[in-house]
Length: 322
Image (tube, rainbow, N blue to C red):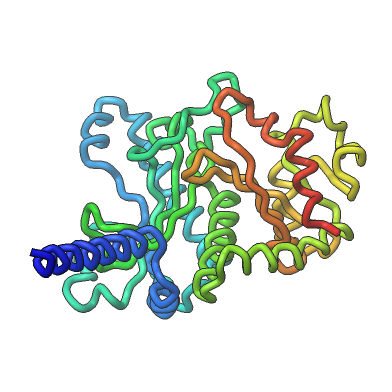
């Protein structure tokens, strides 16, 4: 009886270990998966017109034209951003999802990595405060839905089937992404993916951030005026009692221009949501697009966008900068 019990117990333990290993692997793909992905050709999945939507809009010619132009504009902006900022793989191609499905049949799938923007419907974060200032990037609201979160999802082509886990994903702000948001997303994706290709642990990433954060003391931090209450923290710049280094509060276009100019005197602050009801604050050096600090704050749907950066958050920024 003891032998039977021991055998059953051993089988149970072994099965539990396999289950745990499988579960862990799905949650955090191993280093080799990212190494393999970096050697593939990235297919950027372009947005296609929805036949049902086109049929619905046939009676409203103006709306149909707006919709079709939005799809074209969305794809144009995505192409421009990927061509300039996507460096994770050497080869990049652009195809519709229908074309992709024909390309990845059988063994060919293992040649490709798929990058796609998706509207978040399965795990939506709480919708933003209706009183918040919302930017609808495209004129036709059937695409530009302010009540949804989007994400850029990266997956191995052979894992395209429903229910298969993606390799990695990052959320975008609750606007349909345009060129600036696409560009930031490509930079952030590569930062996160490069950490995984190197097999860095969380402690290693923190060490790198601490080392890079020192450069912020010599740079002016560019903050989007929509992310901070200027009446509370300063007009044009943050009072040094909150953040002791140079800051400049400006509009998104002006900030992005300095990033494109590779101006060594500046660093850009970009804030995006994650899957844990948090906001991730990325600090990007304009000179070389090095990520020199990362800070995480709680996401509160009741707060307006201009309240994302408060006194506690500003103090948190300084912890790594010494």
